[in-house]
Length: 124
Image 1 (cartoon, helix red, strand yellow):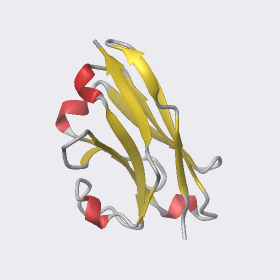
Image 2 (cartoon, rainbow, N blue to C red; image 1 turned 60 degrees about the vertical axis):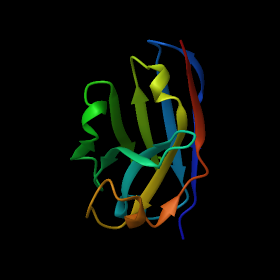
Image 3 (spheres, rainbow, N blue to C red; image 1 turned 120 degrees about the vertical axis):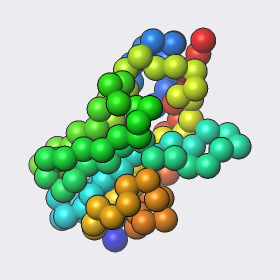
């Protein structure tokens, strides 16, 4: 069983930055592939970024490349999402998720564990 707790969301102006964190309870955090998703009101949950077990490989939704950076610190059982040049359309609840294997990054059904989410609001 893995418990994930996101933090770092908030209200930011267009062009600003936020760094989201996701702390995991798992003793074997490095055994999990991690992903970040977001869900805006009335929309489906969508994949934003993923990172492999050691952090050696990362994957992004095309629209995120260059603005968002995923990273992890296995010694701290934490995965991060650095978000720069934020836009109002980035407003959503952001979730981190964990699974054992890479598989298909963008399929949220593939992930075994989810956090409760953290709200990000970008004002225009």
